[in-house]
Structures are given as C-alpha cells and as structure tokens.
Image (cartoon, rainbow, N blue to C red; front, side, top):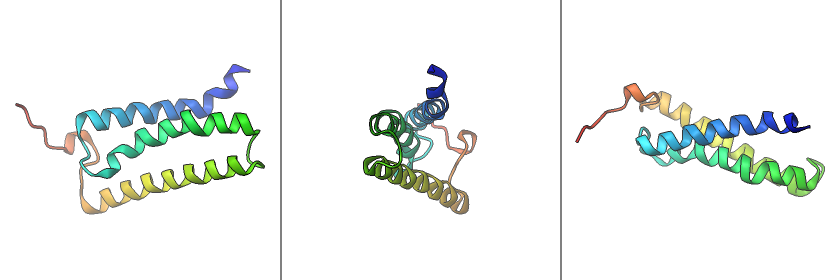
Length: 100
C-alpha cells in the first residue's frame, strides 16, 4: 500500500531539490527561478493531501487543485521555452560564475 504514494511524490521531491539548487546557485535571475520549487512544494503540500482528503477528481476541490497544478506546469514550460528562444542560460555551465 505504501508504494502507491511513491510515483507522485518522487518527481515532486526532485522538483523541490532542483528548485532549491536553482535558487541557491542563482542560475536563473528572473521570476521563473521559483517555479520548480513551487511546483514540487505544491504537489507535496497541497495536491496530494487534497486528493487523499476528497477522494479524487469528481470532487470540485480536487478539480480546482488540479487546474492550479496545470497552470504551474504551463508556467514552467513557457519559462523554459522562452529561455531557449532568448538565449538565457538553462544549464549551469552556461551561466556566469563570479568568484569573490
């Protein structure tokens, strides 16, 4: 029974880890830098508990929570697409490193 909770929480934990790394390393300087951490945190702290509490998508609360989750995914995707078209650094090796 415990393995049923693993699939949604594992990517969420990865997004939190990557989001914290992006925030700490200051690789991205725009508002999009908070999106990976926000998406992972939202999944762990809001989405999964509401799905467990309401029983899933037939409940209106569950549908609204999924809609907000979808908006976060779209914002992250738009940020990455915009980043690739404008030439903003996506990978840490492309970012400027300042040693003080």
